[in-house]
Amino acid sequence: MGVLSQIEPLLMRVQKPAQYIGGEMGSVVKDASKVDVRFAFCFPDTYEIGMSHLGMKILYSLINARDNYWCERVFAPDEDFEALMRAHQIPLYALESLTPVRTFDLVGFTLQYELSYTTVLNMLDLAGIPLHADQRGDSLAVPLVFAGGPCVCNPEPLAPFFDFFILGEGEEVNLEVMDLYLLMKQKGASRAEFLRAAAQIPGIYVPSLYEVTYHEDGTVAAITPKGDAPQTVQKRVVDDMDQVFYPETFVVPYMEIVHDRAVEEVLRGCIRGCRFCQAGFLYRPFREKSPETIERQCRSLCDSTGYQELSFSSLSTSDHSRLEETLQRLMPYFEENRINLTLPSLRVDNFSRELMERIQGVRKSSLTFAPEAGTQRLRDVINKNVTEEEIFRTAALAFSGGFSNVKLYFMMGLPTETMEDVAGIATLAERLIDLFYETAGHPKGKQVQISISCATFVPKPCTPFVFEPQVAQDELLARQQHLIDCISSRNRKKIKVSWHAYEISLLEAVLARGDRRLSRVIEHAWQLGCKFDSWSEHFHYARWAQAFEETGLSPAFYAQRTRPYTEIFPWEHLDYLVDKDFLIRENQLAHTAVTTPHCRQKCAGCGVNRRIGRACF
Image (spheres, rainbow, N blue to C red):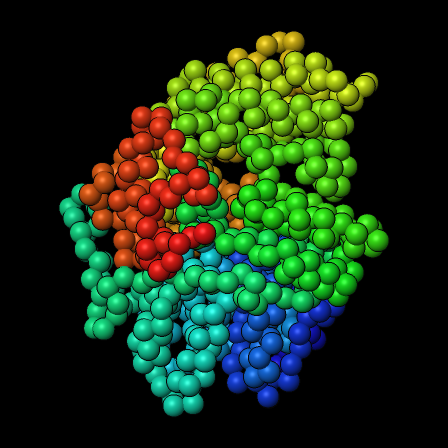
């Protein structure tokens, strides 16, 4: 039974009521009586964030292409509507049918960011689903709760709350799970029987089938599978990007969302091997779509949705080997239909005037690049493989093409970073200012503006820097102040510096490298009122600090200690195809500031090609 009659009188009392009613163009509504398996796809953030997520768009259309399966969307209600829902006893519901999430067969979350974990618990509570997997009984009458996404490379802090996790890419394995569920449901199987069977599907991790023990110092001693559960679970990989499912249309929202445009995924993976970048290792191997496939899918999306802006999605768009050919195929269609194309994820070492001229959506106001470090030595440490000459060449191209604003992304607290490296950020920015006025064709009558954003380095699983400690707060504050002091007074108005709150990065590091014991902290923080932690206006570190203290766990243990190469990580039984020995070699090279060529130049031996049984290119 739907909740429309309950929510309708409340909608005028909340901000952005359109996010709670469904019915958008492109949404899929089916007859529930003719559906065998119902799947609630939950995004642990607000509608305007979740509706921008490409993964949800892909799996939503993929599942709904099967007549007997129905995928519906669920988002976290904002605080004003949640208060009304709780006051009027309205459970969390899905947008297509407006029926409670607890009535579904499968409830799946996408875990994109560690700071969404308390929101996951809040959504389960609002749905009326027991938080702990072992409290849901042994019947399939209570929904099975699972998750996928990049954070599943280490799902251990959330292990007690989930029945299972999906590792890697979901286009094939999600349907396999739903097929198994239908079969087991028809047989009248128990929850335990389903989970034991699901654990045999490649890419499915059932945490209750693994026992974790610890040393006296708090590190993991062993991870032992129970029964016939596999020793390790290997992530799923889609082999052919030209053959894999991609939607012909998107759900078009009534209200503005963060990325309100059509999106075409042009490649997966990354050839670069930046040592801090988790995504660059998680999504290996590198695969790209052909220009023909990209053109066909772009035309379909724009024709069916009416969007007049399209963005290419990838980790490094300019690394597509046939990008210029792709653009040449698309531009006549875009020009005829007045569609703007945006090209994010560009690198300074292969940026060209031709690419710059394709970027229509930015209206020649700003370009964004990520040097990541202020000196060449530190860029070599992190394997950025970008030189200062390439940075200046790209900036000169931008200035001569009419751009006057440049946004630069850096990280602070990187391994081996010194005050000299911090000062190098200010030096680089000031040299760009001088370059602006020296460049022929720079915009006359405009003042150059350099925006510097400094994120705090977060050591992540599956990267060569997973062994590194996160910088302590007092040291980070000293480096931030040194950066400000290094900017000359004549350039203070031309250089804007910003950074995130340290506590947010600290918590991200803790949850990224945590173990199962952290589930107690997450649950207690939620009980203290934590949710939407990635939003600065909702983030309350004092509550998290209280949760750590009252559960007897230390953030410093997880975030601020160097991890020996021999340590067993909490996620050691989860295989993302990149060898630990390779990560160790890369970490050692980092400490000698030696770079590794990117994958097209020379195979670095990460192990992915051996695991997938073919060359990456």
